[in-house]
Amino acid sequence: MHNIGSREFFIALGIGLLHGLFTLCVILSSVWLCLALWIQQPLGSFFSRAAIVLWVLFALSLIGVYVSGHLFSRRTDIIIYCVAFACSLAWYFSLDARQDRDWNPEVAEQLHYEKNGDIVQLHNVRNFDWHADGSYDIRWEDRSIDLNKITGINVITSYWMGPQIAHTLVSFDFADQKPLVFSIEIRKEKGEDFSAIGGFFRKYELSLVASDEKDLIYTRSNIRHEQVYLFPVKMPAPERKALFIEYLHKADELRAEAKWYNTLTSNCTTLVFDMVQAINPQRLPKDYRLLASGYLPNYLYDLKALNQNYSMKEWYRLAHINPRAEQYEQQPNQSSEYFSDVIRIGLPKTE
Image (cartoon, rainbow, N blue to C red; front, side, top):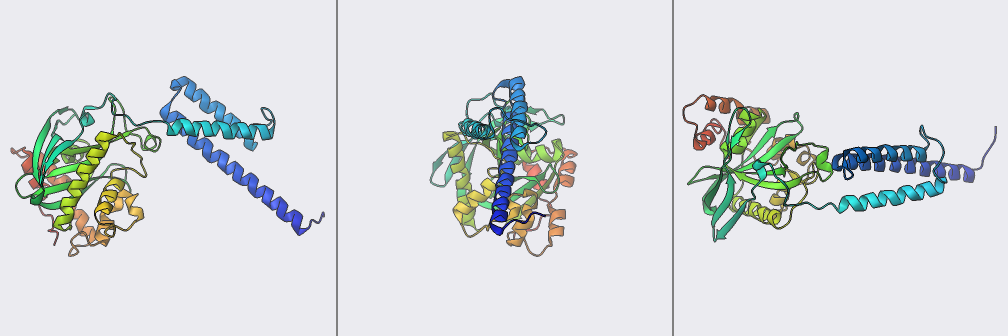
């Protein structure tokens, strides 16, 4: 048996670790780039797929899997790979979010407003009338809001992809009018479908929709048949008002400059978290449930933002609006005010 000294052993170990690290970097960078090319298709469908195949073959040759040999030499091939990947990063991060696409009617208009003291005149509040087949009558409205008459806040979670993932909406109650709900949405183009993977790769711009509850919530519970839960949240009156103003600021930002949606870091839950943090940095500690948004109600319960006289199991039962929303469809009164009243039947008070 050949004996080697400790110096030779550590050199061999270091080289092995470097090779392993290099292989891991090639695999991860190649997976990322191939997905980016697949989602963005910068060269068109055929040539983008051809580029993916060529890149995979090149990457396999670098790490010596299935493909042996080099284009030039191993050192030159590594330099080519690094330069090509750097160029691909420059291409990807040069992709700009835009305001001028052919948008789906649901997100075609952008919220804007005038504010005079505590009176806010909202423009482009969505109030679509939805039909059972998923079609809708388009209607955008103006609404006048007195910020001093906000009486409550509700967090709505709509489950569409298992218990871990939910779409998060925030609804404001008022003393003098029906509720108004805000939703951070992807701004889809006509004919475009949502892809969670595409959301990681600058596929969609962000949109902020202010809407009647009969529109945004009814759509999910009664048309798409998602499982929807409504949780009245404890929040002091000054913070409720400040959160509404944060939504107005977000509308300003998105009108001034288009921004990308990101499935993980810039979505319907993380952006609400950012807005609440802007109001009170101590209120919301960071938690994995801000990413696994389906567990957001449990997070709110642990923060004592939900009425503690009920267990979390009881909360889920009481907050589930689908049975009440289905009964609403059988009633002669189909007004949006009545819908908002029906989905709140039996909900605990915040205190």
